Length: 375
Image (tube, rainbow, N blue to C red):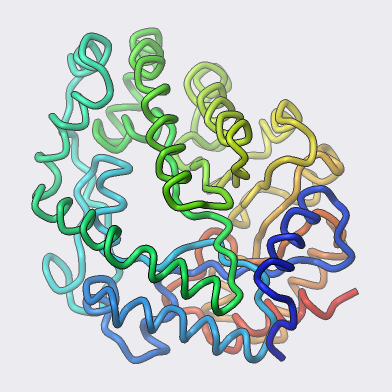
């Protein structure tokens, strides 16, 4: 039961969901690592042999779509994923076949590569000088060159494949606010301590970083002719930082990034890992019916819908443990209950964050099929 909608009709459906004009719940695939095992590829080959890896990725999605109609893709193929994560978070990433066993998942190996004095360096020299200083400490720059060549040569082919197969990619890239970038480079424990001791200094550094972070993101989205992007919320979650830090160092920057995307015609997807219950009403500060909250199962979407109403669309939030260990019936029951509670309008059903690498195929089908059929 593959989708009968065309690519353009699916893009129109995505926009109708954001405006709460949809007549059925949307469905989205999110799981960059999930296809490897099902398609018989070791993880090391899946992320490094980019031509074969991408083919496995698209073939897996088509297999799911043959059973249950996928409207959108929320994650791209993770080719050379370690470069993507390193350049976003400025932290070293271990990969299978090199630092890890051949079929392990990639892992961030976070260690401090900057000190407190680096904030002054950023203030005096800017974001690009900071990146140029830090990147060689966490990755072989030759790999960055290889990644850029891969994107240049294979990126257009991948975009064409998504269009030809009728799968709009609604989150072309993941963008990290300054808070997340500094957390990766400084390491989470040390950065959080800095936030309590020298918050004004960090704010000054983040104020210098933000315009370039936005410029780089907009350039990437423009070059890709993208629909939209993740605006990342990981360490900046309400469940991890105090209200004072969140108000000063997290939310203003996420909000500014999202507004800049909207100004250029791109749809921001707030990718909210961890728990955001405390501050969920702040998303009322965004223009109504303009963006998406993409939660991971820890934020209470029922409460969020009561507080946010039809102001913001939701994308979520079938938890990873259900997809990897539960039965298809339990996955289906979760989806039905979620739709009952938050409604069809303004709702896209997908995995909470990314579907895990060991998600059962039948559970992925059950999630999508139930969302598509349940009224």
